[in-house]
Image 1 (cartoon, rainbow, N blue to C red):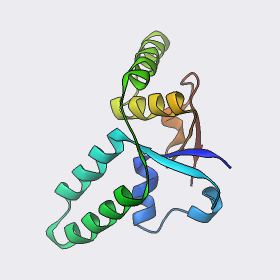
Image 2 (cartoon, rainbow, N blue to C red; image 1 turned 90 degrees about the vertical axis):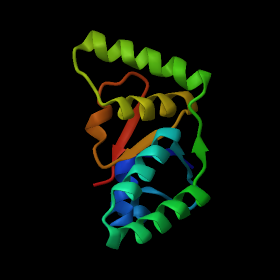
Image 3 (cartoon, helix red, strand yellow; image 1 turned 60 degrees about the vertical axis):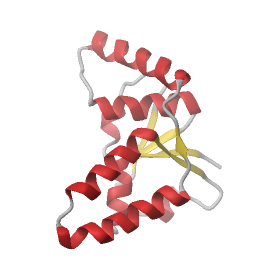
Image 4 (tube, rainbow, N blue to C red; image 1 turned 90 degrees about the horizontal axis):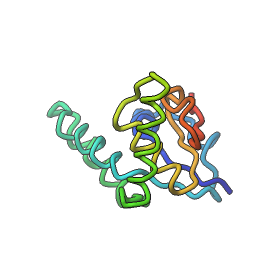
Length: 132
């Protein structure tokens, strides 16, 4: 069993049918999403064209109803602070949302599953696998 944190990019690819779910996520794996992923998915619904919005909303509603959401709490905030310091010292900036996802993964001992695992390269204590 693996503890996995599904990145927003992975879920978007899954919606499009591009993600090989069975190859990476097994029946006995424990999957979750970070709180920031809820915001990213909700923004995707709001930005979707009129023709795609209903389908996208149904998909996001299903994701939110079936996959546990890990909170941005004090523990995650402290992990986030450490990652902020690490990237500033390294001189390699990262996206704010990627750092939040990385901090959540660190705090909960999970491996990030992403369409762009390089976004998590060299983040101390963050393991990530690329689904593509």
